[in-house]
Length: 204
Image (cartoon, rainbow, N blue to C red):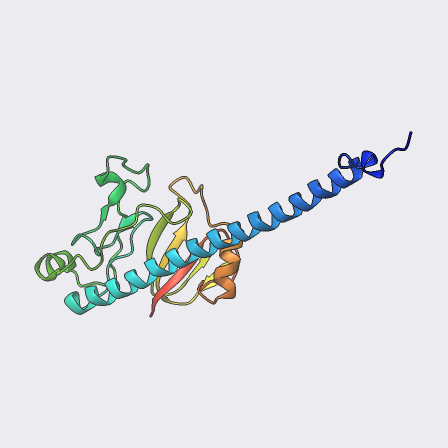
């Protein structure tokens, strides 16, 4: 009986199957890596957009008041959405834990009667809404640092900053890959990696 050569080629060999599986695995890892990079890029773009909104809000506030808003605790709007500092989590029925349950406002750079001035002259809201969460489920923190600051070993020059930080328990901090991207794009004023990013609104 003559055996046809095709009878020996009815399926893949084990080696061929392993090669196919390996190729699929490599392609999948490349796709996942690209998706992760794209997601990080989109999150960074969102943070930059928020910075620009707050940059404009700070300028509009200054034009109306003659001074910038007070420094406040993380998660608190300093006066961009409502005239006086308020917390969007508290308004949503999820009040923050101590010490973030109070604004911690410091307006030492403001006139003594700054609250009266704000109440009389506030012409906001100066942008659409205060974001309850950063793209990484942390909090934004408006910081007024006339003498600069040091954050986890990173030095900041005098200025007004928006901190992209962890939540009230300091979880959900800025991922390393996102922070590295911000540093490489000269977006992060600290220029060093420490789990948060201080985005400069205005130098002082």
